[in-house]
Length: 187
Image (spheres, rainbow, N blue to C red):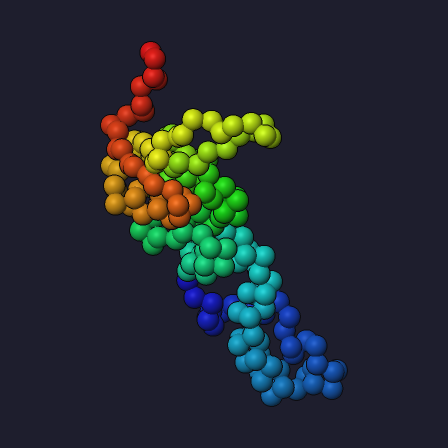
């Protein structure tokens, strides 16, 4: 899509109609301002539609790249357009959940269209009761289990890349790719 001059695009605000009455019947003045209207019509059209350019659900696809960079959203040109739009719409929410299980699961679902389950916390330990002893030492790594959704194969390298980007820097992790949802333990 181009925001350059569009042949035949009428100006919503023709300059010739805004001239003093003296120039209303002047053929040269009307033709001259009509030429300016042709140049300014795309500018007015863009300004009139500015809210649509800033709304990722309806913005032109080439503008979506700029919006994604503006909010720090992942934008892969190979993704379907609807997934790219959703990434921009949900960018702030995903930033809020960054470094958490929920954030990691949502990032994997959004970027790769896969289901995920995260267990373990990468060795972090805490107590909810002040002055009490620490709980037993947790596992030293987080386990990220990923399985396909809708028959889409899982790209293991991309999973590792996303997990590395979304986990806190001190967190070790291990990725398992499953063929389907994990079986309930104890069943």
